[in-house]
Length: 155
Image (tube, rainbow, N blue to C red):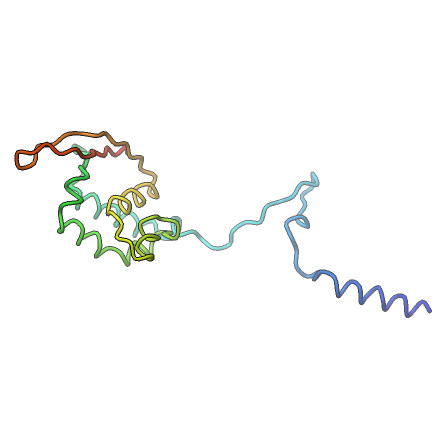
């Protein structure tokens, strides 16, 4: 009878959870506190440092940003097909070197909605740890006052 009971206990263990897998609750340190698992794969931010820096420099070049001029105007981006085309050409590189799954620009683009380029620019700069502040301004364009936004980069 002892053999039958032992066999049933083995069956119960095998039917329950798989003992070869460990959960976070099984990883305990000397203070009996759970230890978080570490990520084995490098993030895109850590893996593609040089490529991301190159993309950031191209964006600075497109927006004419340097040490003396750390601003750009939204009206110029929205109304310049040349700027839009240059940014669109970088689309595949951006997807390759940045984690873009939660970027509103690409979410709207995948749903067939045409998203403004400022969303892409802001997402890239934010991912590169560059802070943006903005200020509403009035511009004179062709004798008309136009209300737009001026962005300031904090780096």
